[in-house]
Length: 199
Image (cartoon, rainbow, N blue to C red):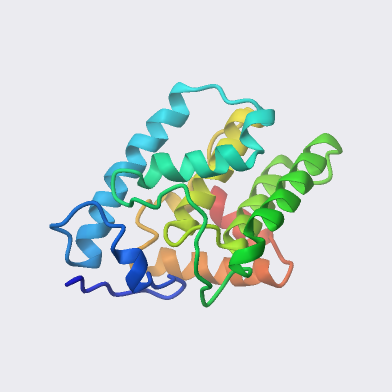
């Protein structure tokens, strides 16, 4: 396909096979793709606001996939489907479902036992879900919205501000701070990511 995608730090390239899943034939650049995806994500956010999801629904593989489909279903044929290729990050494609189940079980345990603060539970879940790298594209945005759903629907708190900037896919200071806080979380220090999420 004649698509000229460029990638910023922390973004995972889309395989050639995955590019064939693009539903919009007019997209030729990353900027155009980002605009279409952002419009789709806005619709997904409205969907989350209209529904009162319970913990038993949220912490399931079915919901995790459904959320991704709502966010990217207008753009990608494979939205809501686990990736079928290995990437430069993430677990092996053959154990995605297993690792997700382990995470969701852990999240349920953290909630039931007040293992961490509400924000930290959401952030730890967000970090693990993006580390597993479930989907070919949109993992960071999906994990942030999933964390928002946890804090708002399960804990009845306000959603995260994520640095008060929805353009985290663009190369700017906000994205730099976000990537830096993710790397800290990779090393077990969640405080910078929690701070970024609320400021």
